[in-house]
Length: 229
Image (cartoon, rainbow, N blue to C red; front, side):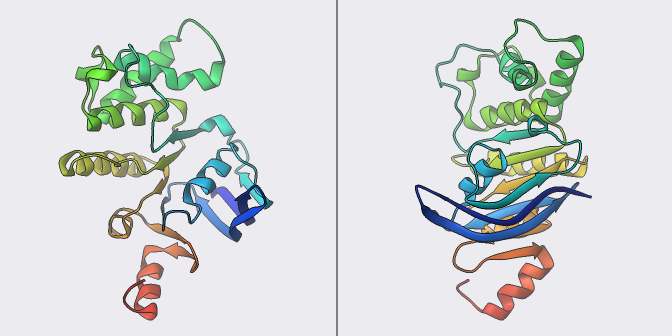
């Protein structure tokens, strides 16, 4: 079942076209990796899916019953200030704020869900720690748990391992893979095509030569195109 349909979309800003006539479908449970050179429109596409930006033409449709606040988002750079004096549990719980507007308490079910999300990310022991005291890898897992609180059906991840060391990177990919296996649809931007081939089941390559298809189809495509692609 299609959760997201991008239909003949043209992306850009200030009258400048970045991506022209892009179409693809993401089905429930897919793991899509978006790759391409800097400036090819990857983050612009993600922001357009989130309705933070409007397409120049074409349409982006969510499946019936899937609302915009059902989409969790992990940006490449967090908007949380590095000196923000909040605990891990408070950061994770803040993922629910988009669902209920301004408020001063969380429901029992929300606290239970947040605890489960922290457990999935392996950060339960960090729940009382101050966010600013954590390592880069720990912070990313906290922010992924926060995104998971916001939505447990579809997650958009923009370079989720940027700046992490190899051990933290491998652990982060393990967590994302486990989420996908549990039924969460993943759309992830990566600068590393080898990671895309290893992790994803579908690949969208953006740039001068566009491609969308399964990992197998992508490997067949690059064999035809030859080295250097």
